[in-house]
Amino acid sequence: MAELSIVIPIYNSEKQIGSLIKKLHSDLKELSFDVVLVNDGSKDQSESVCTQLANEYDNVSFISLMKNFGEFNAVMCGLNFAKGDFVVIIDDDFQNPPSEILKLLNKAKEDDADVVYSYYAEKKHSAFRNWGSRLVNNLTTYLINKPHDLYLSSFKLMRQELVEHIIKFKSPYPYIDGIIFFLTNNVSKVMVDHHPRADGQSSYTLRKLISLFLTVLFGYSLMPIRLIMFTGVFSIFFSLVYMILYFTGAIPEWGSPVIIFLCGVLLCSLAIVGEYVGKTLLILSGVPQFVYRKKIIQKNADK
Image (cartoon, rainbow, N blue to C red):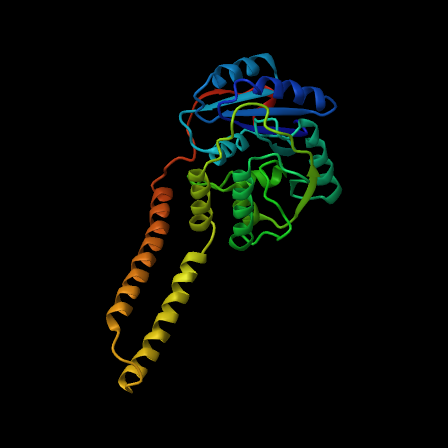
């Protein structure tokens, strides 16, 4: 069994994935490791390039998904085929130098941590992505009860024992960091270098930011339901005060605006409950987390 498995979600990375694999083998030559490439519905020739890499290297496995399921779904697919004692998730854009994996591995051993997150002295993302990352990071502090000083980077290392529990979550809306904090608080962090993107543009968009926010909000938090409860309690209290003041003649009648406001609150509350019910229905109906159409699993990387 390899000491380390490296899961790499692939999306339109035909130009850099070959160089990334070569760099991994160069920088980690002292380690026993395997690589799991997951093509998340790329529109370029990534599938062909990854197939060649899997045929060239006996420690590189490749899974190609039938469509673009999303980065978290692709990572969940890769985790199902990662067998190393430790599992690293790294992006395909070369912004995280492969040599920095050693820092995560050493930190995990030093602290006996279940998870080691990376963080950066200076991030080389666009201004929009940096803003979006800060927003999501601040929100998740309250939604999934993560430590305030912990940055939820996609570049992280986990122990195999934790991975085996993570892949038991079969929701079509996985949020790996949320699952991690459901399972453990034994988390460390280590500073790593961050480089500019090697090629192309980031696929991080406002739409994906909103989608991630909704996934975390409705899939890994009860805050919206609790907000409805507090709003309901406040509405009852407000209504009682209004009735007392009205019947004592302290204020004139202005019931229509109040009714319109409360109807708006009710509709928003129904929408929130509907979002929970809809996601639950999709989970219970067996909507798959991912579906692959091609798989090349090396014998020494088979779980």
